[in-house]
Structure formats: structure tokens, C-alpha cells
Image (cartoon, rainbow, N blue to C red; front, top):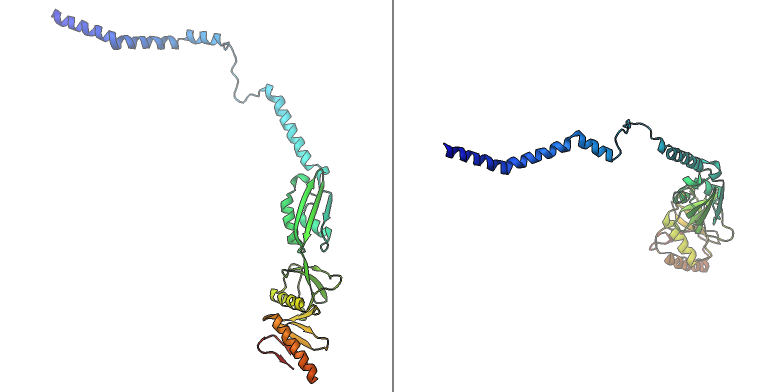
Length: 284
């Protein structure tokens, strides 16, 4: 009996030496850490005892001057951007000969706007769309309210005449503006009187035939165009020559020269010469 009691006592002692003592020590540490005395002692060391709690949403008056300054700066900045002194009043235009300066300024859309709200690249891109004679434009803004527009116009190649109006045409066939070239120029009269406006295009095959004929025979500078006969010219003797819009211009001119010699030799005065088909020339 005593032997069993001794074994039980040893077993209890072993438990106390292992888990028992460790768990007791841990419990003691937690107990001391959670005591109000320890927390109060910590608060006194940090000078936090007795401080009132700040209510949620309460205004911190120490930060009020900074907020007022920020609001004031924002209001001043807005007024600065919309102030009339910074609205575009003076717009200078350079480089134009065909288009009017007022038309270019209106197309840019810069006049009357705040200098800070301008988009120079966008304004420059709108000008060729509204003014066909302008090939490219550069818009530059300058404080407080000035804008300069520099344009480059297209090269004039031909004058197109229809319905009593003359239009300047560039090398691509684009009709630029109403007007006439001072001095000698290649002219094409549309006998069909088709309505055309700046921004429209002249058929490319018409221009190609006209320019080729004029380059090889510079005396030919007044042409007529119609859907029925294509490109034609009226010779000095008064009879027309129909060149059409297709075929070899150089061959047509050589053929015309040979026919003229034959007409002169035989005393023939034709009503017209038809060279629209290179392999089947005709006259009447």
C-alpha cells in the first residue's frame, strides 16, 4: 500500500516539475500583465492618464488655417483661368495668299477662348478641313491672350471654270478657292457646267491628260472638258480636236501634226478632229 502511495506521490511531483510549474508560471504572468495596476502605471509613464477622448468627427482647429489656405488658393486659381484678361483677343495669321485670314481664324476656333483652354494641335488640324487651300498649319499660343497661326498653302496647278466661276485647283485635283491666277495659266472650261465647290475634286484622268498635253505643247493652255468628248482644244483655224481622257498624249500630238500637214496640203477645213481612240482617228 505504501509502495503505491509513494508511486503516486512521485508521479504528482513529476507533473509539477513539468507541465504543472510551466502552466502556473504562465498563468501568473498573464495575471500580472492584465492587472489594472500595471496598465495604470504604464499610462502614467506615457502621460496619458486623464486625457479626454476626441469625439468622432470633431473638427481639429489646429488644421483649419491650412484648409482655409487651400480653399483660397483653389478659388484664386479658378478665377485666374476664367479671367477675361486671358481670353484670346489678338490672332495673327501668316503664310496665306488664297484663303482669307478671317476664314483661317474662324476655322481654328481660338478667338474668344481662354488661353489656358486652347489645344494648339487640335486647332491646327481643323484649319485644312475648313480651308481647302491650306495644306498644313501651326498654332502657337502666347500669354496673356495672343495666338499666332502660320499656314502653308497648296500649290496651284490649274484653273477650273464652270458656271461662270473660276476655281483654283491643286496638283491632286482638289478645288481650293474661287479665284484666278494673275498671268498665264492652264485653264479648263467645263462645258457641262457641272457645279463644283471648294473641297470637291476634279477627275484625275482629266488633269493628267491636260498637263501632259501642255507639257509637250506649251501653246495649248486653254482646254475644254465634257463627258461626251473628254479633253479638247480649239485650234487657231477654229475647229476642235477631241483628245478624250485615255491613251498616249504624245502619240495624239504626233498624229494631230500629221493631219494638219495633210489638211493644209489638200486644202481641207474639217469641222472637228476626233483623236479619242489612238488606233481609230477620225475627222469630219
